[in-house]
Length: 350
Image 1 (cartoon, rainbow, N blue to C red):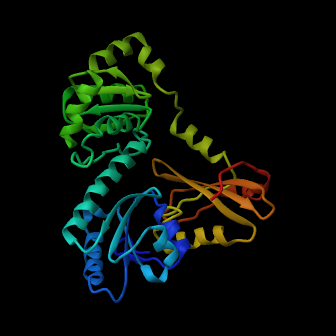
Image 2: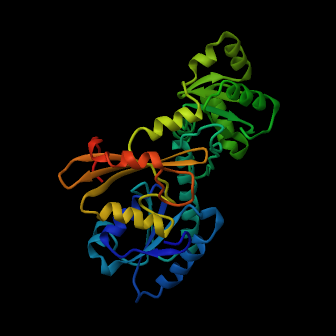
């Protein structure tokens, strides 16, 4: 599937897999004979090519060809547009209204970006800090929930001016330096990116200045408090214990026999080789892919694949890669891979 453009869904399974993507999904239920549908397909195609919407997945499905899906989705007329996020329907537009469709896509994409940033772990020094984008109109009346998710997007969160790579004030620069000196893994949120968050967090935390440091969702304080806790040794004691990058990599690589890297994810592979790999895992008579999780630390990418065999046994395999190819097996993991059936694990069905 191309990374831009509108995909046409061709089966029930295709539809069900597509809507489970963690990204925002927009699906157009159309009919070839309906004159209003073609212009709306063109609107979707234009939206799919906008840089600010590159994370949105667009698709269309002929409503009359899939009556079961249409009935489940309560499609009574075309064009109809359904919006999904993480497998759940979050919005709907009935009728041909290009301006309203465009606005709904942008509003829901802002929500999706916020939720994605709020749920993504951040490893300072290994990956870039999370920078969440929040649409204040779309989150109005739900400020506390958004703030809680932002505060808990990583075990250690620093709300600051700028980010870890480019602090925008002396206090924020000192706070980042303290955390780096303690070799802490931490996430950051740039308060300059959203004035609503900047003001609401002061009220929520009852702390009027920035930076603000949170550990496991609890406010620690600002720079002065951080300095006092460094002097007493309390801050180092409170920070989650982490090993070196090499130790973390070793721990990950030894969890299971096989590691690999793909472009995209199991729902939406981003290249032909990756798609073939997923299809092989899904279609093989020996194993069926049950669950797929991705990690990234520095330049290394990790995937954890949970498999089930024909006899009902469950296995887990890991894949790692530095390369841009979707599948790589190192010399040490090749021998371990032969022992994969001995590595049984439980899991949730695909």
